[in-house]
Image 1 (cartoon, rainbow, N blue to C red):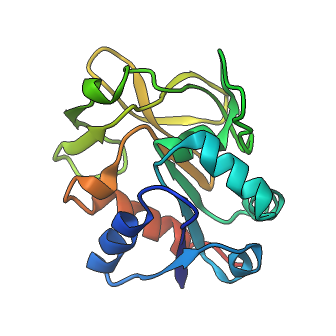
Image 2: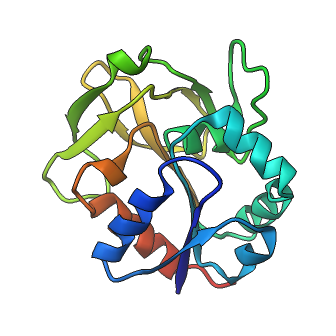
Length: 195
């Protein structure tokens, strides 16, 4: 089983390191032809405009969509959540999401870099201990479709983690938390995938 981390831009090294703490085989992914050998793909945080443009430039958007439809687990963190969304309200010039998850996501929902914060979250599917979530210019989920399961919310009810079948999206950066439980959760998802 091999888990790929999209390595076009963003926090891919940190995800690779976190997967390494679990003993998972993790590889950087930069080409469409590397995708079919994977059991799961992480689209990391970074800059969503850049990531979506690079997905098009490198011809990866359509293969990722096809693999998602075949059931390959895909996890988007922060900008990766934006990439997976079906809808992005407001001024989104330059961002072409993959449209895989039935969610509406607002970019930079908590403000600028200076408004970054950490929060302890209860997360469905993880053990009882709260998860230390790091929010950096983070998006949020404004609306979910029928098949989307809400995994976590901030205390004010803001949705920050969702799952729709083989697709997982979170607003924050688990790779910066020092806690590998979300990565373990995704590894378990990847173990169920049969290419």
